Amino acid sequence: MDIASVSVVIPCYRCAKTIERAVDSVVNQTVRPFELILVDDGSDDQTPELLHYLSKLYGDDWITVLLLSKNSGVSVARNAGWDVATADYVAFLDSDDAWHPQKIELQYSWMQKHKEVALSGHKCVMLTPSNQIPFAAANSDFSVRHLSRRKLLISNPFVTPSFMLKRSMQYRFDPSSRYAEDFLFLLQIGLSGNIIAMLDVELVYIFKEFGVSGLSGNKFKMRCGDIKNYWLLQKYDKINFATMSVLILYSLLKYFGLLLMGSKLHEKLNMLLNKSLRRI
Image 1 (cartoon, rainbow, N blue to C red):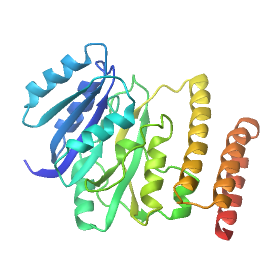
Image 2 (image 1 turned 180 degrees about the vertical axis):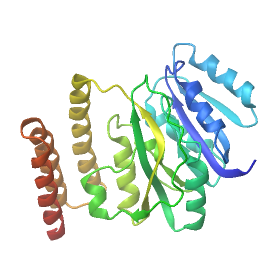
Image 3 (image 1 turned 90 degrees about the vertical axis):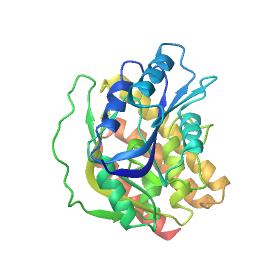
């Protein structure tokens, strides 16, 4: 089997019910990654034992298990796996999600042909936990677009399990951020002059509950995460004060506008924000 120079990092916390599905989706790749790193984030259930079992099952020369002494959050776990990775590229998968079998084959091949790109991501398929994974061949003739600074500032176009990036990247996930930490990470990379690309192909399955109350609460926390991110970017001199102010106002209006007036207002806000950012 062909081997791709990709280190896969899966953060794990109390994930005994789903981790085998995630690992199986890595094992069953048409092009296998160089290594798989499972990082237990201080689980107090049977998760560590299951991770060691999977390592023995598939070979501890291929699967590395890291056990963190306390629960510190997904950013810390991802960074810990990244720090011990040895391949040219790093890809992240969450313990409750799964990859399309051609994920590594298609994305790694594209990254190899476009070495100027620091990070690429792709589309996802949203499923409920009771859904079965749909096995259909991926479109290998997908389109690609580079993401502009303005596009990145307005919204996060990726889920983290779609990321593939150069291992040598100097940035890391912010351990102090519990919501929208992947968005801050993406913005720091994109606003520092690195090229980020969107592959128009669905290569990851995200398993989430879609209850209305849960989604509403999560959206509020994500908006708070966005606001904190914009403040940090201004603090790090990635954006100026005027841009930060416009983005924070937009984030607040978007949240309350969607609650009160629906998607049409959201579209109008996007248009106004684009015009405002052009002037800054």
